[in-house]
Image (cartoon, rainbow, N blue to C red; front, side, top):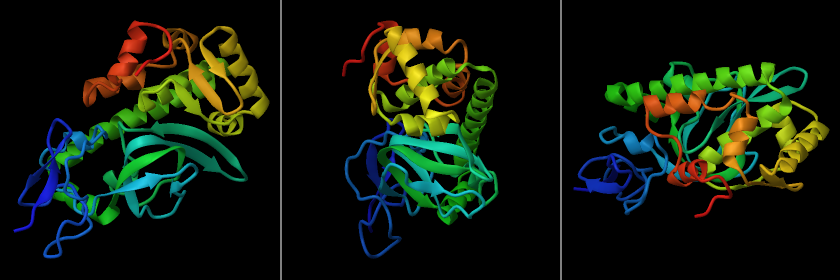
Length: 282
């Protein structure tokens, strides 16, 4: 009998004589599973799936500007992000674009699939390179039907993601650019666990829906307050607590909902940074 990997509640892979998580491990049963080995699952949703079979799950690289979902087109696969960041971008004609949501190791793409549709009106694009576990749409649907607890968990995540999107709309409509930028940096840092972000002013302008010159001015303002250090392609967080103050209340609601509904969002490194203001270490 063949063996496959499955995810225990602590996030580590173990083995069992049935299919849970994996890539190809034999030729006698279902293929396309993650290779049997002692791995650590970073994605928060996958780390909760102690009993849900996910046939067809495979680990893939995420490259900057990869398009994972296109507006109005069927979604072929869902991505559970391990490392990196994915932006959900609202688009409309002729060429209006703005980020409406952010996905990192806490979440997944393909929320429309969980809700019973097959496509989204938004674009999902990789903004920071990394990796993800990918599963074909049909396989995720089958797993949700077979395991009600899986659907329950993913719907709770969608509720949190909807809260994030509504708070983004609030920030975009009522917040000053500097406040929105401080919020965005905090959200990025929550998902990366690092104090350095590689991003261009042009891409930030796209995500925030403003002109590049406005982003440059806002970055210089935050830098002048010793909250960050910024160059043309790099942002370094210097004072996370100061950034929270600069966000002026536009950061924290979705994060609190994630903590309440699923598990603490912040990594230990970020938690220490909030308790001890200054650059992150290790």
